[in-house]
Structures are given as structure tokens and as C-alpha cells.
Image: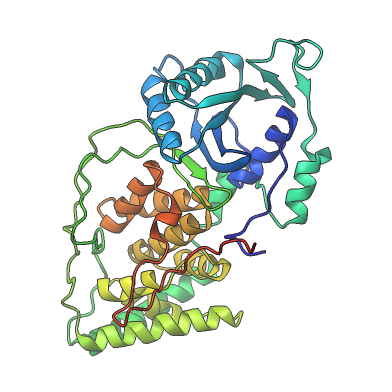
Length: 400
């Protein structure tokens, strides 16, 4: 199934919503709060955040989330909390109030725990008994439809993070050796000494971008099931400035030979991926070394979208790259996942990059876009090439 055109799940009851949420996020949430927003009869947005610590004020994060949901042009939403009442009720109430204040209709407010769901809004014992309603996700028609369509709900968020974790053992040893050879090859190409990168690699922001007012990192993620939006839940904050200036070290100053080699390596990688072939260790190491040059990374970025093969390629590159070389492939994976509507995958990829390279400005830019709820469709048709051709594909419109 094309990941930019996910299956439409029919949600007609609270039980259906509880069954659908793991497939909207890509994993089964726990100790979390989830907001599913709709426009008309279509789900356009879903976001998950960790439950606040006991005693913490949920208000700031709730208001921030409501603003992001309203920014999606949604008109209604359902709030679902996962965990014991003592931790869930306050945050669900705060988010419901913030959504109402933002002009959205709260369709339902649910709590899910130990195989039962409870409704905060329904007071009819016949349909919403006070002891909760048992549910079996495996027996749900929604779950069956999602599985039939090829959608996956991993056991938890840790399982999702494991999909972008580094490969170890013989693979790591082989890549370390191959990367050493690639560094020597690059040194010969540039005439510069071969030295491993120290600290954060160079990153690049568009010339007219900044990160003033960015939110601080929070353990949260989101997904836009129809490719509309994906955003982590977080509260507003001042944030820190990027440690790498816009454009990054060496931006615009790469030797022509490096740009030529980088373009060839990127195109070869995409070509091999389309054929279902995997890069060997030397090809992979050469690509990761070249991606430290901003012009090469941006060439790869311009050709990356939300296709399944894009996600597969950059996942493989991220997992096999040496630790000091993960920033570019991690950002490219995050961008591909975001464009496809897999906001949770984008979030865990960015978390890995920012934990190792907190000043990598492209990661900071993408992280801010996620938590501000910028819709992936905002980049339809961008960027244009020098000859006027559009590299970023536009979404298909249904035939009439």
C-alpha cells in the first residue's frame, strides 16, 4: 500500500475509536493522552503526548495542543487518555476545555485502562456503565480493516524507536571499517586531511529561517493518518539557539568534485532502492560521508518525499551510519516520515539525531515544524528545480 494514501477506517463508536488509535499512531499508547481531530467526517490529525507528572499543571500543554489542532482547520476532536483515573482525568479535562475555548466541538472524552474504556461525557449506564466497557482490539472490525490494509500497530513506542536504533555486532564493525575507507577516499577527493567529525556535524537552515521561540524537546509524537498533519504535544517555551549557523559549516563552499560525487551517490542509492537492492558497506559508508556536505544533503532532501522506498532507504542509512554521521540521514528519514503522515516515526528519528547532535539546524527546523503542527501538504510542489520542474510531488486529487 502506498504510505501516502492510507486506508480509511470507519469509526462509529467509542470502541471503534479505541481500536483505531493504535493504527493512527503506529503503536499502542500507554500512560498517554491522544487527541484525534476531524474535519467533517474525516480524521485529519492525531497527536500523542505523555501524561504529565503527578502534580504538574496540564494547562500550558493543553492550550498549546488545542492551538495546534485548531491550526489544522479541524472542527471537532475526541480526547483519549490511557492510564489510571488519578493521572488521566485532569489532563483530559484540561485538553477538552482548551479545545472548546479554541472553537472545536469535543465529540467524546475517553479513558482507557486494563482492557476497558470509560466515557467522561456519556452518563447513560446502558451504553457507558460506570465500571467501564470491556473491549477486545483483536475482535474489532476496525482493527481487522487496518491489518487487511497493511497498517501496523507496534506494541509500544519503544518498539517504534527500535526501528531507528543503530545496528550493532558484525554490521557495526563492517561499517566502521568501510567508513574509514570512505573518509580516506573523501580526503583524496578534497585534498584535505581525513579526520572523523567531532561534535555536531554541520547542518543547514534555509537562509530566511530561524528558530526563535522554539519549543523545548518533549517525549511526544503525532501522526496525520491522511497525510494532513503530524505534531508532538508540547508546551510553549523559549528554547535555545541552534549551535550551528544557518547554512552550516561549508555551506556553499563544497568542492565541485564533492557535489558531483554526492549527486551520483544519492541518485545511485535511490535507483538501487527502487530495484529492491541494498547498498553494500562501502557504498553506504561513502554516502554517509558525502551527506555531511550540505549541498549533497540538500540534493538528497529535494528528492525525498513520503514514498515507502524513501522511508526504507533512509531508515537503512540511519541505522548503519557511524554515530557522528547520523544527523543528515536521520533528518531525511524524519522528513520522509512526516510527508507520509507517520509523525511518530518522524519524532523518534529526530529524537535520535538531536540527542547526539542538538545543534544540527535541519533537525531543529523539522522538530519545530512537527510540534507546531505544520501540515505536510504545506510543501506540496516544493522545491522547484532550476529548469522549473517540481521535485516535491503534489498530492493526487480523487477522480470525479
